[in-house]
Amino acid sequence: MKTAPHIADATPANDGAFALVEVMVALLILAVGMLGAGLMLNAAMENDRYNNRVRFAQKAAQAKIEEIRSGGAAKYPNRSGSERLSGNGDWGSSVPSGWATREWSVSEDPVSHTEKIAVTVRWGKHEFTQVSYSK
Image (cartoon, rainbow, N blue to C red; front, side, top):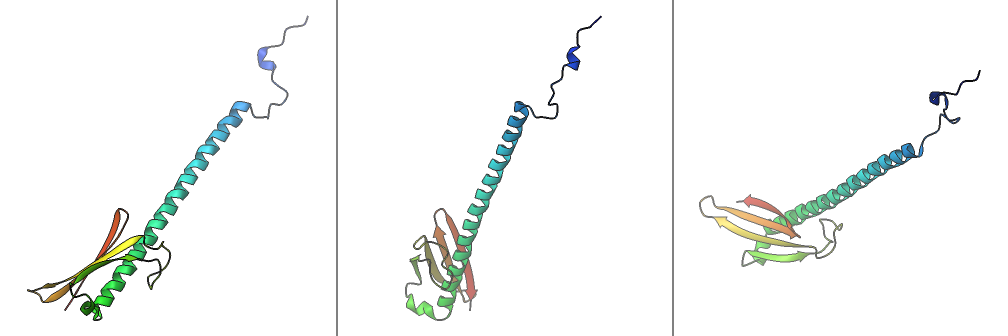
């Protein structure tokens, strides 16, 4: 006498294949991973752009301090000033022209008889200040 096959015995012939749900879950995991990698790359590029501008600001501030120290203070009788920065100059050309302003002031300390030179470079909501003292 014949018996009915058990349900457990009724397996599909292509047992090694993936189901549609498994493939969709794998694609979802891959998409989330790719999105995360893209966001990290974007953050790294923004950080690199910011660091380039800080480096530019450092060089622009140092150039003004050296100019004032080398006798250029006589060119500034009011002992302060400001200017828009261009992207070219000795401090590099990797930034757009006119993106920042450079302000400086020279003051004397009557007690220590030192000259304080303060230079601030501003761009957007950021700023970099460098101060130098000399006798």
